[in-house]
Image (cartoon, rainbow, N blue to C red; front, side, top):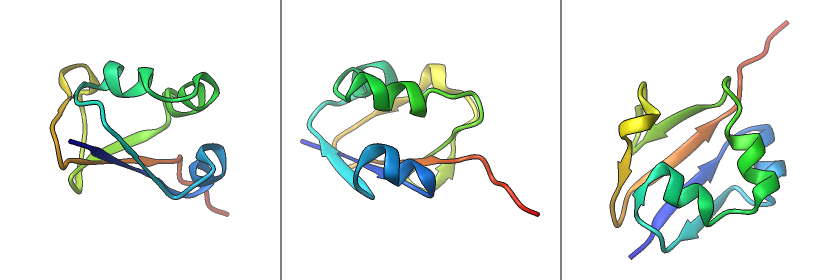
Length: 80
């Protein structure tokens, strides 16, 4: 059982890799508890967006992850 976490943009630097597998399933809080606290702080920013299996997540509170899911963390978009 595993969840694939994908870190895009500058979040890849914070995570130290573009993706990571975690063997925890369930709530987003359970997934985050399996990560380094410094990374969790970065990923918990209000401007960080989430996509579950390619679909943007609008409500993090009800998010439940199951074996084989992919959760992507998207940084704020900046332009110039």
